[in-house]
Image 1 (cartoon, one colour):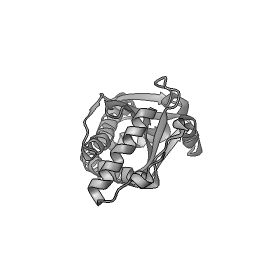
Image 2 (cartoon, helix red, strand yellow):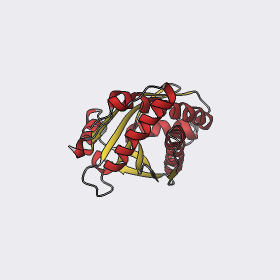
Image 3 (cartoon, rainbow, N blue to C red):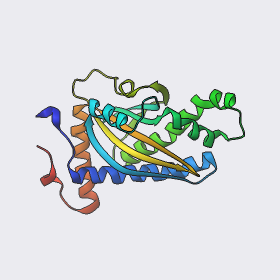
Length: 215
């Protein structure tokens, strides 16, 4: 059915490769901000419904969440989100602004620090993907939101939005911070992404991805 379009294993592998390139570049930039080595990994990328995305967050005991989102538009349009369990976000902020600051000072800087983190990571991923797919994306400024899982996947009114859900592990010094990178795409954007990934695979490997397309 048309509302169940998903990515093939080959397309997901190519997408994961692109996101890996993006977060590798972002990790270098983020390490300059926190003045410590930052290791970001992309262990898994899946395409799910909004309901499944919310369930994935619940499975990771992420009840109260903080997220940074940026909208993007071009041949592909949607929203990119960087989501953390709220309890862990303070660790990230401490790494960014310094442990020597008081809790009140850290709270005051929270929005700015989170927005900067999201800007570095989301822009890094989106820009790398766009360049590799030979397309341009217009990316909005980051916004910070707090809430539960359903609050993060409520935007837009399309009936069959798809969430591209990517699990990222953040390692900053001794801090083990797990974050989630999600991209919400409408059906036309997902179909276009399939085509762009197929073209990327053919350019990169010379191997046609046509046989792996989802009908």
